[in-house]
Image (cartoon, rainbow, N blue to C red; front, top):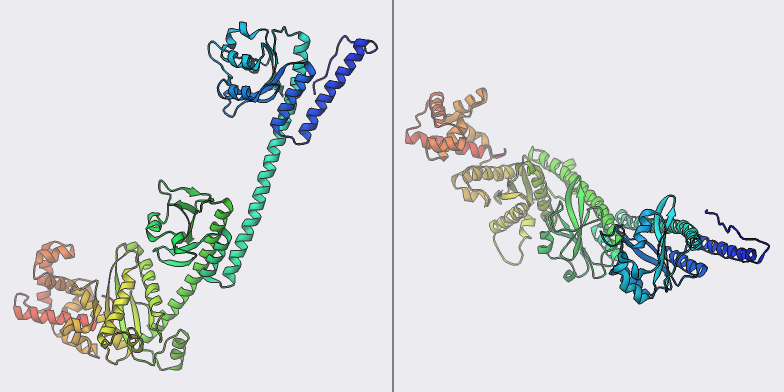
Length: 624
């Protein structure tokens, strides 16, 4: 702390008594400044007290404290005594004191700040450098001024300016006293800044603590709903209560999973589709962690599982805005919804696996009337004692790398469709296709409004399955085949449907629903109970070719199929096989040699075509 010197005064004489009184006033002023800082009074209040103290102690008409603004380019008046608010506002806005000035005008305050030394102006009217501030000075009513730097720790932090209304010669005594007060004021200023920063930090820490506490309570409440098996509906309702807004949850395909509140307040499908599932597109404002984004007056949060966006949570932003606590609630909700979807997905995957194992056993010839098999089926909601039809569906997948995921989603949708019927159809993946063993009673309850026939009802089942499959993202199409309604074993029904699917795909009938009746002769052959007869008949013509392919790994049979499908055009067959036409010619000659055939003879072509058709039918239980 700077020391106070009243050199030359005699404590015993009148001057000494006066000096003692002045010393007390100074000490009381310094103590008042320290007390103001210790009491946590604001920075600007302390600066005003500094100006009041300088004016009262040294008898100036006006005083002001100037500090750098936020840009660091100007000095602005932040504390004053005697100056009018209008003057302060005009100087700060219209005539700020530039720290670096220009080539002509240098304000005393900027000179004192840069040099660290006092600067006095006896008469501002005779000071050309003061011209920019002459007008406001006359309005305020001062003629002379003294500016001393506020120095703390070797750094200049501002200036203390004092003004007289008349021309005045500033004495060394006045400069010394104002400098001494400025030194104390600089300490008070830096201390007040530190106190203010600490107070702001404490406020920020308290807010963060409160936010964290409330955030944890929100998370706990949402988690409790999930643990109580409240499901998506319960989680959505809890979130709506927390943020006082309606809420909507959609899956990755845009289907609504759960919602609460009025539809008129929630985004429509057009708004939801406008926001990409992932990434940060230009024009989209991302909040906080990036989980929450804005779109068209609504707020959306992504829900992820294993890095994949599986759902989104939507709610209106609201006229009052979206608070940080609202954002935290939405982020926590997205995590809890992710856990709920994971639980549902895990349960669904287990069900799919159990149903897949049951279907595989049935199609492998397991006795469905045996107690173990019947009990397994009963626990899964299936009644195997009833007659069933078989439906087999195959997808045309747009993105090969997403084939597995696309089939999983298709299986989930077909399973969801089947869950609405009693007895429940058995749906699972089998040999690369979606397979449904559909009870005939469920087929009959499909349409009660119109007295349609059995075939129309079966077609309706197959069409519903196809619509569900083709609605999956990345599905370019779906071909579905259904067995006839004749009572037959599960294995026979599946083989008929699978054979119809294979024949349809090989003959170019894709992305549709087919039945054996749609396939003519091939459909009739599919009704045979013993496929070995078909293979035996086909082998009278093509056994040598099949054996050649099996032993040598060649593709003669495939080449023969494509050649016939290409209307005997070797060029077209080569194009479809992605080989040279000479290669096709060589393979055809090899076929003629191996099987002792003349492919130029019309009767041979008919015989070969029939044999290939029989093989297609016989191999109906295998993937196409």
